[in-house]
Image 1 (cartoon, helix red, strand yellow):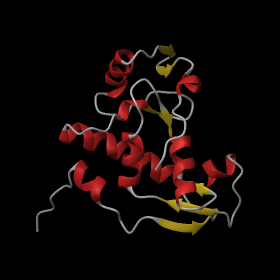
Image 2 (tube, one colour; image 1 turned 180 degrees about the vertical axis):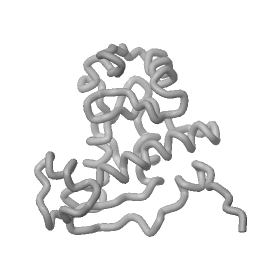
Image 3 (cartoon, one colour; image 1 turned 45 degrees about the vertical axis):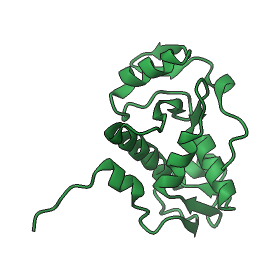
Image 4 (cartoon, helix red, strand yellow; image 1 turned 90 degrees about the vertical axis):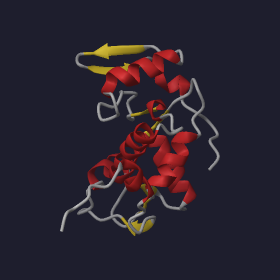
Length: 163
């Protein structure tokens, strides 16, 4: 039997039995990252759906930005948990970006940054394309070695995003 690889859009629409609310365990792939933010074993964690992540990304207006941290905070609030799995959310951010590129969709993925304001090398077209799209919206991109960041990104983070 021939295996047909899923499109990015199909991956975006595949909820994989998510969302899931779990109690944080040391064996979870996102445990170390969540532990750095103060999470402890037994704390409640949500694994959201790819479409929920995409919906948040779509709400970020031109000229404003969001990071993985803010997306996770919004998802944890929505699902009434203490935390959100940063690993699955990061994967779903990349999935949403590639699905938008594949379908010429309306998700402005380039406005979603890593937690430290860094551009995402895994986005369609890499950091070169993300740089171009962000500069078109008035953001200043700075280089630090081989990496690129939005200058003073904290001042441009979206506020009061309603889900």
